[in-house]
Image 1 (cartoon, one colour):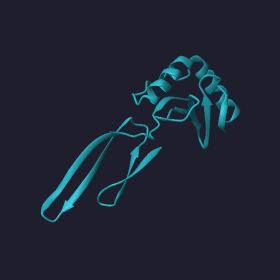
Image 2 (cartoon, rainbow, N blue to C red):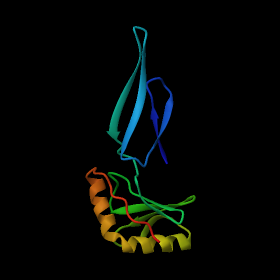
Image 3 (spheres, rainbow, N blue to C red):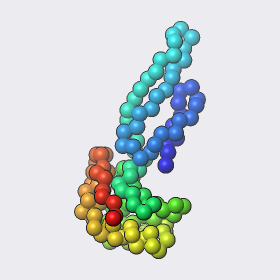
Image 4 (cartoon, rainbow, N blue to C red):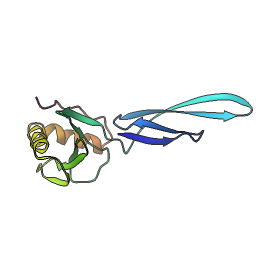
Length: 133
């Protein structure tokens, strides 16, 4: 997943959205001076860091996302939003076997998911969670 940003010279850059801190570089062109490179590091509010990856399934969590506490499980073209407390799918879907693996993983790591939800809501860096073996 990539975040699209527009640069000063009207070009478009695609930055990895899974990074908590994103560095973007823009060039300012001026007739009176040579091109200068400006570098800024900022927190991407819509970034969705990867928490874990196993058997082709990617687990992510948005910063400043809506309630209830949940995570995104992605498998190929499928995506499901799963509540942390109940492990209920409240949006989207996954193939049956992928969903079973995600629910098994989430049950093992529910406390870590709650902690990452708390950290995400406060804009803190999220912790990676061990994958399912």
